[in-house]
Image 1 (spheres, one colour):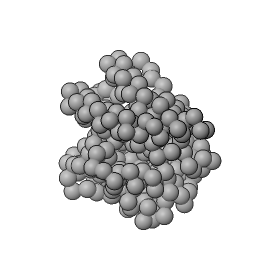
Image 2: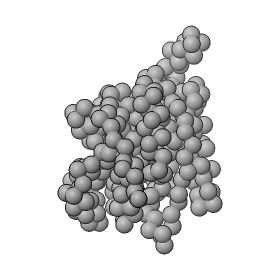
Image 3: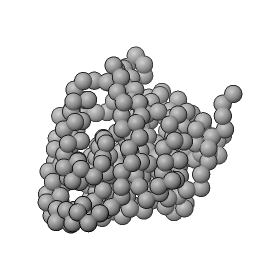
Image 4: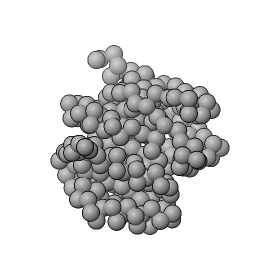
Length: 255
């Protein structure tokens, strides 16, 4: 028997989705088994999944589908949902990918950690198995090193893993305050800027599934384009870090 999903008036699950393929329906169903409400932000998908997700939502009051007319990037999709969540009175969102990589069964544990520490961000720390591409595993170590330098090693376990709980108010304020963080740069820049704003990270281990094409896996990651984007992101974050360094040092030594 499928257990009834946990519910919350303050915390929701948010799934940004762009041409995800068939796995999105399994992802959404598994999330709904564990939590209510679940929101899916369809970021200009052209693969027919938007209409099928809306059909699911017609028969499920715990599921809501938001649609953007054109693909604008993960960060833009998340911000669109953050604004709607804030208007609806939600204070926290758990983000997870639509492609089946993230562990839906851990949603309640992450939500409980957030409810115990609503001032913090709850960050997934990925546990890789043999399916993880070695190039991706090694490459993220570079981004993680930079993110920790830019925050004076404030405790960010992983800067790229998108299975995490954000407090809505500070993240909205940060994103509306500048024009970055709208695409693949969203996840790492969000944790750095939230750390700068005084939002403490709490790390929880979580497995990652890398699915191949035969398993229905869909990846929009472009090695050269997205690493170029990350390089530019860390360049501007490092400059911001230098400007904030006296305050960051003062905060570190005054704790």
